[in-house]
Image 1 (cartoon, rainbow, N blue to C red):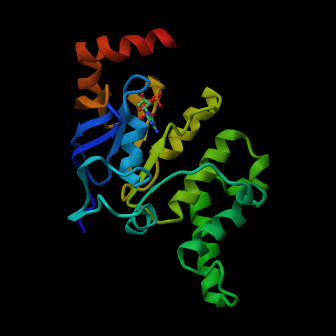
Image 2 (cartoon, rainbow, N blue to C red; image 1 turned 180 degrees about the vertical axis):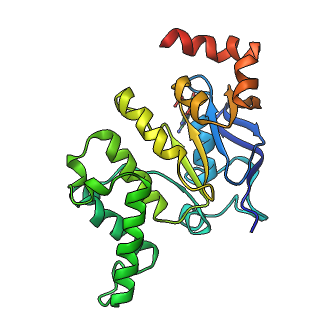
Length: 251
Ligand SMILES: Nc1ncnc2c1ncn2[C@@H]1O[C@H](COP(=O)(O)OP(=O)(O)OP(=O)(O)O)[C@@H](O)[C@H]1O
């Protein structure tokens, strides 16, 4: 299946306020695509419209050939579109390995099954082991998640999202609230995730954006301002005026 994620004229209106206005974007399979823009530009709203956390006022979302605009969130996850969620209290009290096995069991519909075959259990443990390796968490497998540094907790959240076997992974400021040394490490791991997974991320740290994104969309005032490669965006004087100049001042 063609797994391109695409929007057409996506719009979200609250009262008289247009949080997203006619947003038409295409995310190619395997893309590392950043969404940037000033505070309040509508980036999180856009991700919420993609995942189905918010209903769109107008416009369409397509996942491959299928229109998914009205599809509930959990069905979009089943199709292969997922985002990270903060680890809840249940997961925080489990070890990293237990959490990941639980997420895999949930995907397979085994979580509440009173009987699991040895094959099912072995397959889940093997898959969890591979996810731990991918996310460089093997040494932390038996640590209770809440005792990990924040940067590693973010990696566990990504592992839990990957356990749903996504084709598209949406990350809303994955490095928010963690020390900058850890955030670079976090992005190194994200950058090495398998190419089958398309990654769309919101990030305010321009160092990380220009290091890890291969395509950048700039949003301003709920609209797409421009889109291009990192080199094109860096050279765009208008982007400097509306955003990058401001972002540089903030640092
Ligand atoms: N439930 C809501 N009702 C009304 N307005 C809202 C609601 N949620 C968000 N907004 C407004 O929509 C605008 C876009 O918000 P959004 O969070 O999408 O921007 P953002 O680009 O992600 O910003 P930031 O970079 O600060 O996270 C903001 O002005 C915000 O105040």
